[in-house]
Length: 223
Length: 283
Image (cartoon, rainbow over all chains, first blue to last red; front, side, top):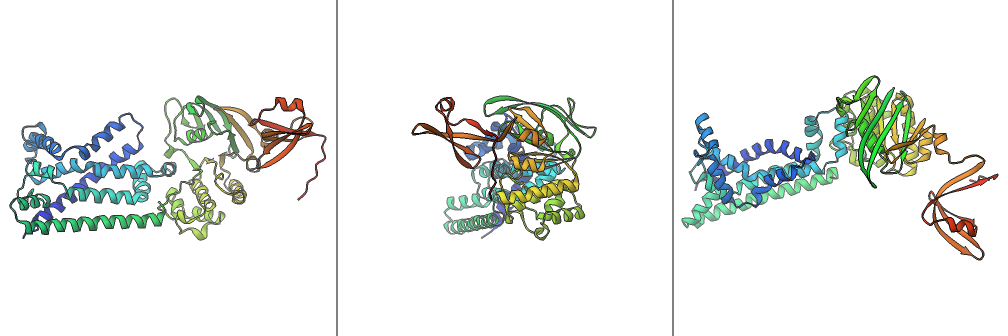
């Protein structure tokens, strides 16, 4: 019994959460502060992966990353990176798939902050960057943790997009969810049971720790 | 010298209105800004702080903060701002709240001792009472040694006893630091105690500007006593009429004639005054 698919799943989820955090932080800040008319359109666009069937998302990503599209061709010609049926491609696909799970909690966190507190920081002479990192983020730790953990967990749990974009190449794109699917198909129920039970256990532990942490924060800061 | 001349379109309670104010302030002056809610007081303060933009000019000590070409960012204006809801940095201790603004430990200690907060310096804001929080907020606003201190109804959320205590503290801080101050307030006794000048706004325009005594005292001519109140009810008792009037927190009964009561309308603001009256003050 190999745990390779699990390690691959966590590697994918960790990398996705890290990249998405870097992308979503400025995006969520922008959305929380802007009065632009474009806001609902950007919000709808970032929320699309929640409502779209994974097959639709997977199909478009597959098409966009393949050599037949300018994006795929550019990456392969310039960097020599094949985006389809590779781990790199999976990371790109996961970033699209899990984007709303990072952006929305962060945006909610930013929006729930006392606006006057941010203004007090500007008046104190602090730039937006310093205000975000020293005033905004430390005052929204529950939102921060929720965003990172839920993104991570959601990426571990993804199946449709991964299957379409990555296939099932051992040690490259065969993540835990795909592995379980294959075990069931080949009627290896024992392995499927072990894998599935592990998934349930880990996911439950992660969520419980998030809720415990948030409850403690609420008590400490009266948020 | 601070020169202010600004215009801005606002959406008030009664639809669109034009905020249009021009006035100068001397260095070290303590100006109270009063007026009905929605008259543009807070917006005026926020424009001075650079938190909202406007047309016009603001010049502070020969330096332009706002003109047709540019609008100086709030970060670059030397101001202190005290919000009604304190707006403290919840993730920092009391001392850190001050040091975040300006890493001057000596000044922080001086301010914390002046406001009797030194013992609490390692506590977090959410463990303090409203009055203590507002003292932190005022101290924090003074950390940058600002050119102007802006106070937006700083004491309106506090109980009367705490309010009186903090008024004295604001007064002694003003004497100590001589910071030019503009304070939004509704409380005439507070304004009388603290301010050297009152500006009254109505519908975005300045309607009165002068010493607190001239602007706040309601008596004119030979009137000895004059109170403004709201007419709540008129009762007929035998042949006379009695009007019930709310003056501040107190209700009073006043005898009115039949002719007078015909002109009065329930719910309106009325003035009650007497002449040639020898009042007795009892404790």
